Length: 237
Image 1 (spheres, one colour):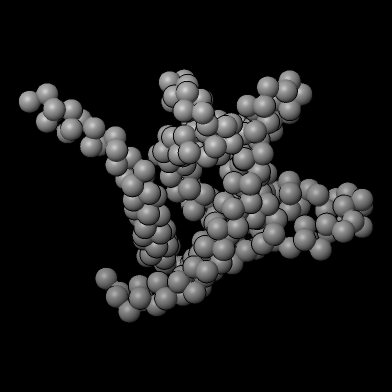
Image 2: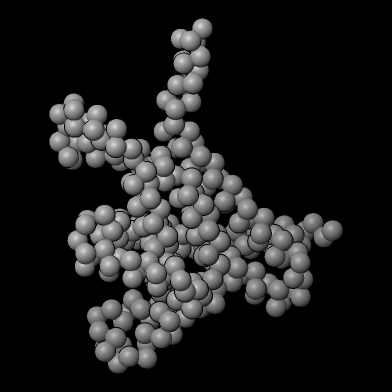
């Protein structure tokens, strides 16, 4: 095993790590904002908004992310109206197109995660809040939102891990994140196995840290649910 070569590869890949993290953070943040809007549209009870949100989710969940990246980066530039619009300075940049593509795609998945988490909030919880005299906003802030957040975290963690891995698709539109750097190293060294193993190890470590952080949040939010069975056993005895 060529340890010096592996260390050199890892060092070069780590130089591209900030680009990968920037893609992830920006796309997840933008996607989260869009997902909240879509979730509100789905649960608003307004027929037109609900159908519009359903159509969005169907399109972006039902088509490959790779195709979406190509359509946004290569496809939009074919329209003169877009090339001469105020959005063109942004849409002509590979990094911006990658962020937009990832955000639009993850928003569809996150919207369904958030909607399912809201629907999973029990009627007895909201009825108890109303019995205590809570207003609608107060009930959402203190009862509905914490419960929905706890319900959403397992699926949301999975989506975040998938998003970290999806940032590798940005390399196909010349964004020099870790996978793009790995491909360049392979063309220079012809050592595919070692380079991609190093890249896979870094992605694995990122996802491990992310899963542990979100797992800690889930652990803190679910403390009372773990204590309840213990207290019940003690009282029963």
